[in-house]
Length: 232
Image 1 (tube, rainbow, N blue to C red):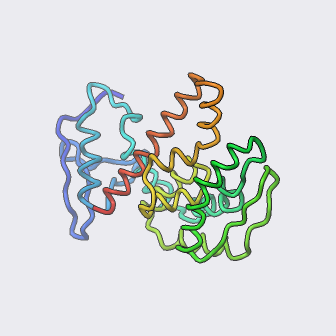
Image 2: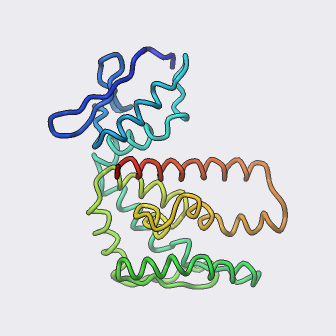
Image 3: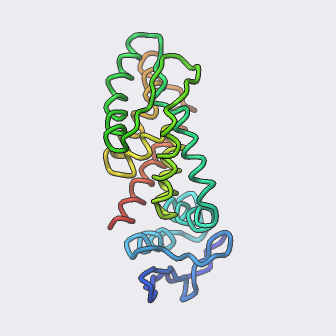
């Protein structure tokens, strides 16, 4: 899409929310809703993404805009759907399934993943069961209700961030740790791809896999920045 505007500004609303304006007109989401943001820091960052566009608008260069639009168009409209997807990750959380072989990988998983599981248990007073292999095991009966309550307490923007981080890493534990600032995006990336990075160390790099990991790393970086702006 060709750039159709010259000036990008923000405007605070009476309720404290902030809108983004393109040549004085309200920015709309893909679903044609008003692009209303909860704070000035995020609104200014979104405005900066639009201002930085050249003669053509490139959505892939606007990760904060995409996250915010997802929050407005999808999560605000159906928070239960996003929450349900997050809760289901608890049944098969990445950190709960350890390798049987090789022993070096199993040891690294235990060393790197267990501290986050311990953090999760202490923070939310629920234990995630751990096993070796890929056969699914039952989790404690109170895990799903606890995750549901966590999601229900989040606004649409933070729920969107948690959903993005959880989906990217395959772990609701890592998603929540990033949401709460217990880890950063670099750590979430490293722990979420621990198995793959281990194999890369042993067998060398694959160009296609490297490109996919770079995109994943960029997504997690964007989620971290999105959260920081929400908390500013």
